[in-house]
Length: 488
Image (cartoon, rainbow, N blue to C red; front, side, top):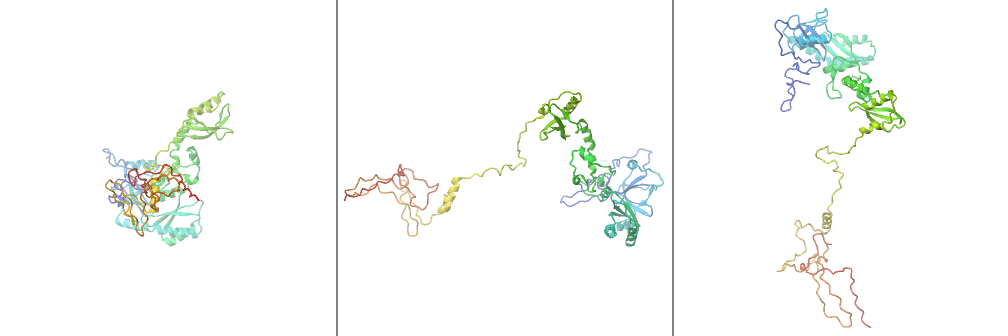
């Protein structure tokens, strides 16, 4: 709550209030009144209202007569009349709006108790006023210590000095009557000034001290609320609020004043609702109201003995059943009316985050078995994928022939791994006589069988005509024929 001249600069530094808190156009001060007649001139022949509104510490205000016709504007510091001496305050409102405010607060002008404005405050008056204001905080701490030592059931909440420094007013709160005669004597001895004790309520204390409410804004009583109306728990019941004292109470310890703000709207809406204690009589049984929804205009009823089954009705349906009960007309059941309000609810979980999926942690991890197998085999063999694999140590690469077919791998040297054997010869020499038939010739031995590797995804059997040619035998499990024993 500030005017356009307040805020922060381009670099983030606070600009402060260019009008020193006296702009008079918005809520820079406590209980500020917006002067919407400031840019309007009076008609010819009409004199301006000669009363002004003066604000003192916190929200204390008073109305003074400008008997000397001093030219005053909002923000001027003036010296005003007091019971003894003078007081220093700031002008917060002038003109015709002062008449409206005085009428609203029931302050009658031109009475014997009317106070006057002496003059605009001089620099000497302002120095005395600021010096007295600087003493208030240390005096409050000392005053609380004295009250605790005297075992008085009271709380000193604030101290306010008069403008000339001749009197100090102590504001305190107490539930019972307090005998502070000894307290005043000690105050007078310690502080060397006239003492005035003034008791205030808990809400007036919160208004003077100020603070931030549970809504995140400044307290209403310290910004604009001046009349404190009684708040009861029935206001919370009408608004369907839980009767939790910690949530319903404000900083003053009393029920929040804002409970009365929307109470009239709720009262008007509840006029169309039947009373919650009214029962509905049907042929199926007697129904009792369990819950109401003021915003949607729905009521929930349950049969006696079937408290877990609730039936939703509208206010028109409930009033129709009540009217039928008064006329003693039969009503079959509540299901006839509740069936019209049954809606098919489709559960749809939308992506409220906007970017991340709500089920991103529910999806199973996709694993590439081929890649995992390759990594596992390469970690055991020392092989790496083609392109990143360094030159093998201890193995001599094979050079292709003129036809493009690689020949047999050379013999490994000492300290190197054995290389794969070349293809077997197609036939052996002549067999000695007396032996059995010659076994069928075998095909070429598959490559890589002599390596330590078991073979990877990149190492496949050579196709026909390449890498030694030939193909695997049709049946791997076929046993080799045994050699016949020689005749004895």
